[in-house]
Length: 209
Length: 209
Image (cartoon, rainbow over all chains, first blue to last red):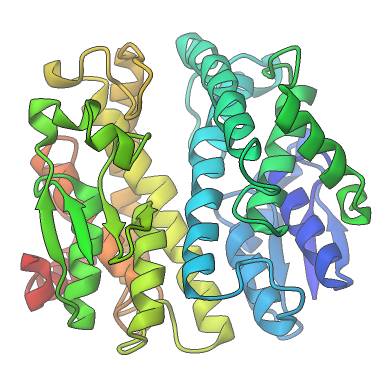
């Protein structure tokens, strides 16, 4: 299986960490998004949405969307369980994972893509150009701070984001927290419960994937 | 099981249709979002994100986020399968479901919440007030049109959104298409393949749920 990847981007990192936790080796195909190569053939024929990651199976089938890829890897390698361990735990894991995506990922992406010179006129990924909206960058920063507060409150009552065990919700949260910090939308200080959790998940070998 | 619901809102409709397809009867608890009652006790203690739907189990456990609720219902009642039928089909269903959510739902929500007088200063759901951004409303309209084109192209090659069988991706697509039409962000005409699909899925008894 080949993973079309761009090392600095947050979404492929979610898949790389997920695969590392499962002990799955993927054949990495780098796609240098910074060069614009993903907007041309052959990549635009691999994924018309012009984003990474994409998982290509040995028969050529392509799976797009990070979480769809993770679900496929989970079916192949159910252990350790990262989507939850029973019906209610799986529902709660989905709930927390979506909260991280909706409240964290979209906020950090808005903050970066509507401010950075690099994304001028490409405020959204995909084949259609959209102008940056400066108010959206500022709103993104505010929402990242709000997300940090929500996450800290949650981690004050639970060892991990979704439950007492590491899950895909922790992977998403780690990736977005690091992404926000690296791209300048994170608050200066990480609150205490979140900082303790962050140190723990960052120390897992998968975090380097 | 009780479902906290607001009939006109798109997200609870996703759960109602999903439950109807499964033949699951839910005890509906209406929460009149138009009155603002969801921003006060007792509802703000039921869901601090101040949104519907929420599924409350008989022991008081609350599951938030539409898709988390659908996954829980799916675990209780696996038939008919609405998340796919085998590992690859489940991955492809997740992929298409997410495309509908990312490209359709966020676009239609942006278009409505950044324009409607009703959502003034509440451009995002949740406990924090955010001002409307008129450019975001306009971008939302453009993206809804782009989504209609994407969906029509897909439905020109596939009987249903994710595969040759009805799935949660069709439920999400039906809900967002109807929501965009009702709230004024949909293009005037539905392209042919999409129109044929829409007539078919709207004729299912679940569409009235």
